[in-house]
Length: 472
Image (cartoon, rainbow, N blue to C red):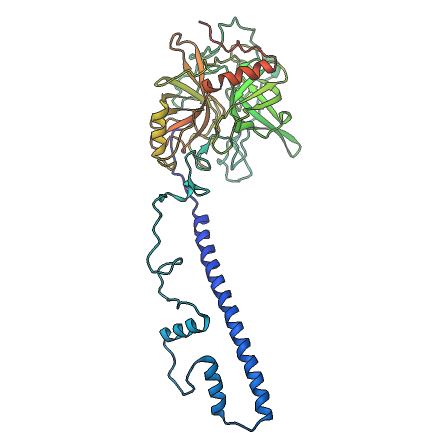
């Protein structure tokens, strides 16, 4: 979760390279043209000289003046001794020989025949280079937005803090547990009140002095971590990928950008996690393998349109105090100007200086109306033509509050207006412009816009699609 912000840097290499290539291309073609023309002229001169030389051998001797006259007739110059030619005269000679206009050494432009800089045509507009794609101003943010993904320029081990050790091959971890696993308490099944039940005072105990926005243990029982299993040497490790939310004992809702292209066999879901570096929590977490990955058929990487995915688990989780389901909103529900919560283990600040969180964090955010959010985003590097897709919603814009890298796929939950004790998942953490930069809201996949698709996928996989319906 984000508290601070950093400036985003831009890469200008491609722009400079393009100009260099253009200059080289023009120079190369001019030189080649001149070489071809010059070679043609020289072959003519040499052939004439050869014929003339043969004639000189079989005819009477001639003086040097005759040869000079021959050369002069071929080149169009006077055979008398002259002072060295000035640049202008040399250019004129080149023009005569090659039938080209003289090239000024002080030309102000590369293209065109005049010395005036080329002006843009009336049907185009000058914009930053990164906004122009295939000759058209980008209005969807592709290649510009900062995707909330937890696995980019560094390995995101679950429970490891990178960048805190002098040796770049080392990570900062707590010592191994000394707790006997047999002493871990397994909570009994709970008498459920339905989905969406947040525990603001925690489960079993309450932490105090939570100035760093730590969530209480079990406060968001639907929160899960999506992990990727890999072998590092001879050891199997869990690489943190993204967040997600339980919508069924056998199903997790997350962002498509987190799991697209991944095989079910390499993923697993951890429910009931809180502190990633200890097993001393009063109730254990539950790990489940993934049997199936379902990505929305209209998902578009880069722009993140339709950024929805469902993971079907190999076996159901046990619904207990720290593991439970979130409720989903009705189709096209609106949450404008609500106070909502996002949660995750993502970075505290944007960029390499940011660290992933050990304890689950939460941040309270206001939702922002779609049109207002679009206007805010147009004030950023996205430009004034940016259009916020209908499958997105926004939240945030308050100083120092935002989701960040690594929070992707996690839920944004809002209280029901008719029953504030029950929470609906309004959004899925998707992307933003940096983290908490300049009052710009973060962007979330709009769950209400995908409610029909979610119901269809659940029914297709023989799963009850009423379990995430809130009780009235």
